[in-house]
Picture (cartoon, rainbow, N blue to C red):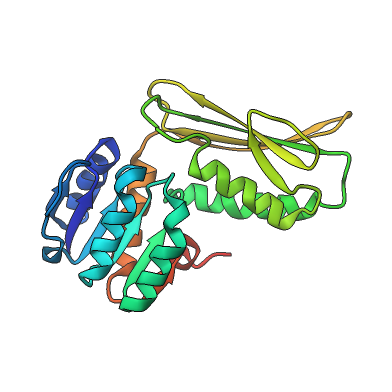
Length: 234
């Protein structure tokens, strides 16, 4: 399979290594400032770029009939536009805030716990995420997904806020520490105890492997999908 990498930072280079090991060919690498590239040489594109160019990358793929998966966060004000374009062009598109297989299982655990805790109003929820210092957005897309899933499954909470606690609000603390691939923690705390679930990434390999698996799965399909479709969970 011929793969285009849109975004060639640390994650792009890790994806490249894993894709080649799985027998694929990298036919195009696009840095954040590259323009005018020929996406049509690819069977599928993997976008791990930056927020300001992600939507343009995705649109270019869909306009040229190239299936695309995106793991870039911080661009989601244009997500509905990407979905509309995908449907208009009868293309194929996946966005995930995190492609790690373990994180996507963690998402499902988080939803289940949120439902279980919905009748226990004595528990307050807080979250913490830690990433490497080069991550541009805060909180992380993964943290936002976790918070939104809690809100959707637990009526005790209506919103999340960065570094701020308020009634019916989930506070998210975002830390940036050198060489940390990603840690996400969800705490339910009452006066008598605390319940914690946590996912700790040891390397970027898990994110990259999940992205390549998603790209392999997407080729030949039409529509807008999620990692739940790829993994057949949820």
